[in-house]
Image (cartoon, rainbow, N blue to C red; front, side, top):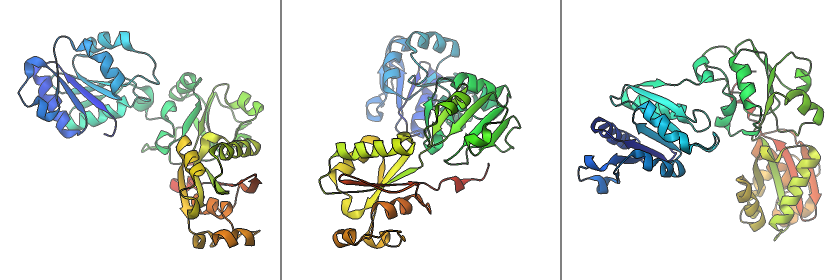
Length: 368
């Protein structure tokens, strides 16, 4: 359990369960009523409160990703109702009954992770998990979590509710996947017949569907958006590798401008960039380091010997003279991505050289 979790209990039996959970999940914070003090609270980092738990809930909502309340469900619903804001920001809320027989996912089941937290807590207590989210119950695609385990980013969330409805109501749904990991179907049963998969928007163009899930690194045309996103959700898989070289002292601003402009010219999404790849001589280049940090991209680096294992169409004696490698951006992109060809072999702009390759991630599972 890597997220920040709070457990709150207000009864004698609830406090015992809270202490048990705090032992089993190191790092979670336990809140108990003052009257159940034992004397070891300071040593164990247990938080004491008096009065109604209602008074500490706003603070818990601000501080924690998940909240486990060993309190009756009805009371919890009344207490949290006034402080709810948005499903994208509200924490996961899980309720446990006073005998520890049922663990109930109450709030932010998908985006907040309450469903998964419910399963973890139930397993630790030997209790029954109670999850009512339709996609979980029916074992089908959770639209708001689709590809999340792979790091996919949702770009268009506006139609998530009607698209989810189409999935659970077994209406025709098109999953259009042009890139990214294919192991997204994890249930021990075949993909339902109402969900059809396609490898491109061209392939899906003539299909009969009521909703679409589009997974691509490409920028869609206006026509494609009209066809597939009028009742669809767009996902950005992390598949673009930027092979980069630059002169010493190249600024973050110049590097960023070249990357953004190049991706736009190629009609690729910035949100699908996975990482930068370059020569080890540039591992501490301030501009490159700042660019990677700004966007949360990792930076893969290679020795000249490693870069020279890639056959280049136009090896550069000049680059070799200064770096020991016959090229930087082109071979770095291929080595990091695992691809055989470039999407963009090389573009030189000012002090910056960029190559683009598509990461070979689809082989993780064969479901399409």
